[in-house]
Length: 187
Image (cartoon, rainbow, N blue to C red; front, side, top):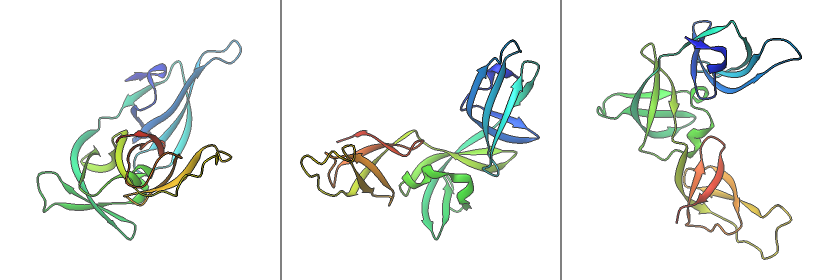
C-alpha cells in the first residue's frame, strides 16, 4: 500500500479495481488544512485521463504489472502488430488507444516491453530515447531564425518533428519518445 505522498509520476496504482499510471502529482496545502496530493492519472486499459486528489488518510494499492519483451513488427491501416520475442508464431495486435503517441517513433523489429495486468497486455513501455534517420529535411536558409531556428523534418518511421536548422537529410538523431521532440544529433 502506498501513502498519499508516495503517489508520484511513473508509478502504477489501482483505483476502482483498474490499473492507472500516475502522470502528474503535486502535494500542496491549502491555507491551514491538511496536505493534499493532486494527481493526474491515465487508465492503462482505456487510456482515459482522470484527476484525483488524495488526502493524508488515503492509501492506494500499487499495481503489480509484469513485463514481457515483445517485438514490434509493422503497422497496417491503423493496426499495430507485435510478436513474442521467443516465439514467432504468437502474433498479436494492439489497438491505438493503448499504444499512445510514442509508437510513431518505433522502427519495425524494435524490442519493447509489454505491460501485463492479470495476464492481459494493457500497454507498451517505450525506451525514453530512440535513434532515427532523417529522410526529409528542407535546406536551411542563412538568417532564417524568425521561426525560432527550427524546421520540420520527416523521420524514417514517417513521423514529423521540429528540429534545429543544422539537421540535414541522412543524419541520425535521438528523439525523446515521451515528448515527441528532438533531443540531440547522434552522428
